[in-house]
Image 1: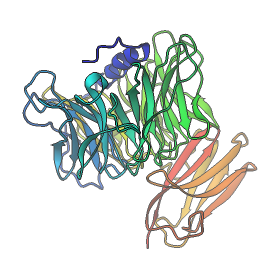
Image 2: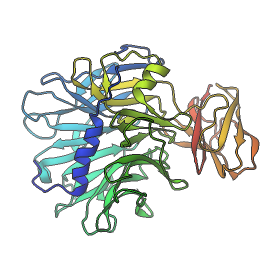
Image 3: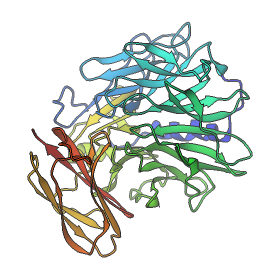
Image 4: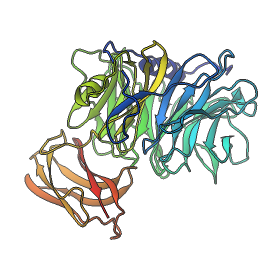
Length: 480
């Protein structure tokens, strides 16, 4: 056990996210198993053998193929083991760093699921708990600093290629400090916002590893979300109106532009936020008839789909539909039969927005992680307008080989408009437009080339149109 007293940030992290994670919606939910991967489906992840039935999903790879989390694999008290789940291989334990019964958890995976990060008990580090990096070739390896010393703490997220890791480590004098790890430099602390009490945590990282988000004590009484990048370092996003000075950034889009989290909007209630440098804080509309408290845990690669939890169950947001209950979306929009399931949370989403994972109560009343695959929710459809002040009409062809086009209707108050072609991993392929447009109709064309004029490969891309008021996106398929 960690003998140090819990800090204000830690106490809130321990109580608030866990309560949302296990919150149970009264909506009924059975499982449609073994469905084709190109059709909507929902399934429980099962658990590791050896202990009581129990599993929690903590993350999904960018391509949606791999779920990571923790499960009981031993009858020993307080034992738990990190796992990696795939549709073909099921749930496989990843082991641990220390001797005896396993005590490890997996928090995040690289884009293809080949690199996994998390926390494991070990005798090598301060507080007997260390962040690790796992691959099939190396197994679980504790992260070390530039001197080769293992540090106590936890790895929370990893870049798309698995080369950069973000999390929290324990300093030599027992402070919590956000860190960024690379093989070349080891664990490097990111510091703190100006405060009387040093305490910072990193929770999310962009696809290329250049942007890290989290929270830090700030000032004398506040907790502020931050964005870190190599030049400016750690920058506070500031406070939000209402409540006390308290907010956490949980995730950042793969392209590094969109940050999501929760902020204390009143004395006792938190509200999801979406933030970008251009728009500042955006608060999605709350669900009618539900409790005010909710939080955004994760965002798709292009920032167009946000997922999280409320006291009344799991939530999902996209510009075309607003904030919705996940159980209702799975049952009503996609016809999935979830009888007996009570979905408690959505904790992560794949980069293309088509795969979501979370934890709930299965038909036997046990805690179990789950995965759902559904068509990309960010597509706005024919002539559907989002809150960004623009409406997108596909002109086609789509799929296309040489060129495709969209008609863009711009409202008078849309402001500056930016249109990007993104890979499903959030990587920017081409900027099609970045200008203030006159109100009315405009045509966007893409010839299938990247910013350097090279032909982009065949595959799925996203056209994202953003203004200061939000974003809308549409999926594009390029064929050979």
